[in-house]
Amino acid sequence: MKKIYYSAPLPFVGQKRMFAKEFKKVLEQFPDGTTFVDLFGGSGLLSHITKSEKPHSKVVYNDFDGYRLRLEHVPQTNELLSELRKIVRELPKHKPIVGGARKQIFECLIKHQDRYGYLDFITISSSLLFSMKYCLNIDDMNKETLYNNIRSTDYPLCDGYLDGLTIVSADYKQVFNQYKDTPNVVFLVDPPYLSTEVGTYKMYWKLADYLDVLSVLAGHSFVYFTSNKSSILELCDWIGRNKHIGNPFEKCTKVEFNARMNYNSTYTDMMLYKNAG
Image (tube, rainbow, N blue to C red; front, side, top):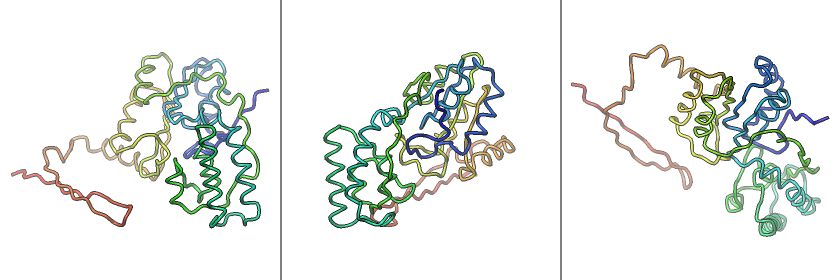
């Protein structure tokens, strides 16, 4: 019998494992044979569960973040973790890695990347960095404190996890346009959350990008995920109650000033003005 995963087999920021059982209940509303399009596929967990529950449905998994490449390299990642365990075997768990051990860690990472031409930084970050902190290259990781959080067992090979899925890798708008006129289509919409760290995604998200996602919901069946940190529902409710206002900043003049908090943190102050007289 095919294994059904209720959490992603490799670390991924924002995977929906806490929603897995409730998501299965939502899927019961749609007949088998429905087309499901996972616009922000992420770890593929929603697509995997959907295909497991609806085996006769077409399930489109938009792997924009390259998760399947990480799955393909699990054997190499396990090999690297085995080498890292040897380096830290005498060190206390969950404590900083310093001195010669830290130097050995980076020598090991560089050697592994040179050997295979690939390194799964997100998975390795979960073993070497503070909880929920991720780096995407060695230079950035070298700026961080390393911790001995190295996983004690290998990751499973994940055979069958993506079986039966139609896998694409494109901007969600392109995928949406391809399937928006498909009969009985359901869009799975799990964008990066507003006001939440999105450092592991391959794109930079502005407020307008979050709002653009809402346009795919109109007139379609969907399952949409958000967070109370984003205030997106509150914003939409306010706009719905104040349709007459429009854009109060239209025809304003904007003045910007770049400010610096410290050596690696900057922000932009803005002043907008309009003379309505």
